Length: 341
Image: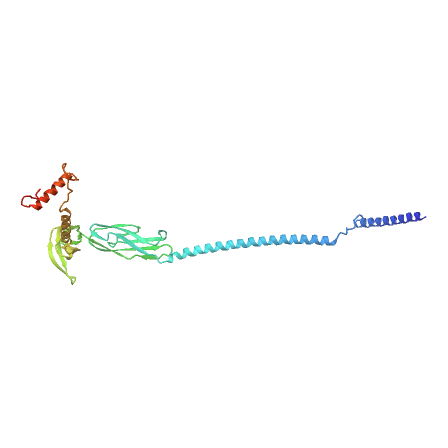
């Protein structure tokens, strides 16, 4: 009986467990959507998913917006920089012509005898690209002008001519004027060379005429005084000359070149120092120093004595005894014996 009760109890517990399991299965089946209803999933999961999507969308939108903004800003900055550079360049170009340009004349030679050809050149800070007009005036007549950069002009008559130059710029249409240059043209030019121009007395100097156009010459030698005045000491009329300056001092040699009624003059300075006194002093010093030295050095010549074949370095003992005996008897009787050898 007890066993039967125990068996029934076990069966009842099993039945209860089976019922509970069945009830659980029914509940799950109803919520899974078999009857067309919306499944009831955990709302937390839906919220998280939605939030993630929103975040992703927001992040994407934000990134896109930021990228777009940055690109726009960069483009704007680049445009601004380009505009600034263009503006600066334009301003510089516009202000360059307003600087103070410099213009001057180069001419070679500045004087000479007719016909005299002069080569001119422009020396300026104005660039060639900004030179609208070049105007040379050579001062000879109304036809003596040029618009070249490096012209030349030949003067056919004597006189002094004024050369001018002006340059007009393209950028501001302004004329820049150079300082004028004087050209001296003559059919008579006086010039000469002198060699040497300084030295000790007596100084011989050669003078060579290099004048242009003269038919006669006059050389005048002047001695300069302490009051900066000069006194004529000699004259010559040859074309070239050689002159000897015997005394110390400063001299001026003047050449006057003449042609018909015209004459032109030029001069050079000659410096003469005192006569040299070092030669006699050197001679005396040499005589006083060299002679005694030579005499003392070449006086008696000492020679070593030489031995003949008969000479012996060690004397014979018998000879020594004979000499001793002879000396003894000579001392005892000087009248009979002599010490002469």
